[in-house]
Length: 121
Length: 169
Image 1 (cartoon, each protein chain N blue to C red):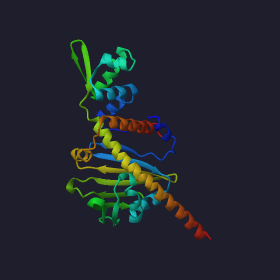
Image 2: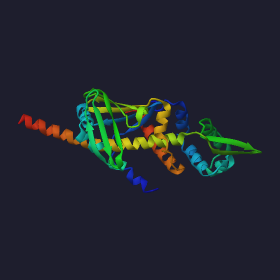
Image 3: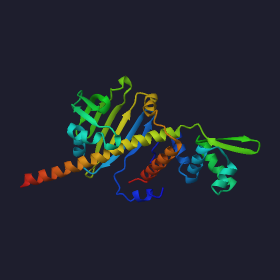
Image 4: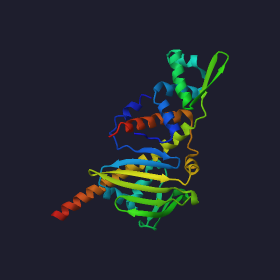
């Protein structure tokens, strides 16, 4: 089931489906880091970390820059955080409304039941 | 952090999901454990509507609610702090479909379409908001951005929602 028809959001969510990649993004949100530093921090091989960073980079969530022999990673320009935060806020508003609506509906169901009983009596 | 685990044991409510359908449309989906006529009634009777449209979590109370639920009829919701929402009904088809305008913001307001689809005594509700342009929808979301840490927390929750929903059911 495709939840997001926006292809860039699809790529972003795919990139974020992995717990390590989410950790990497959170880490980069605090400070830029080299791939070596990230690999150490997440107890991972350099090759493994390069792959993760590559996926994040493709999704536009991370940008990397090579200076000398060190590749530095930083949070990309992608607007995903804003989009996701807004969607989540919106969802929470509606979830709150619908939980209340459940209560109203439950009452209407009960009323209908007892009305039906009265009619039969 | 550890305190979070306890709250996971709460009984499951029906899930509310949000999808961005296109550049200018957003959809909210939820199932209710009642026939469509009952859910529809709760959307079209002001005294019932008033009880759930402004839940406590919204932090603002709905002072009055007038609804003339027929094609061309108007509605007006007045919240505390002088906030008003109003528009008119474009389609009223009990118990399966409601369409209304949102005119409080002038011309750029979205059109809201709510469909009630009954399946085995339950009702699948889909509410869509169609904006006149991508810019209008984006503008509705501007200002929602918050600090990074909180964002990723919310994102986790969102991904859990999306993941669980992707499994079907």
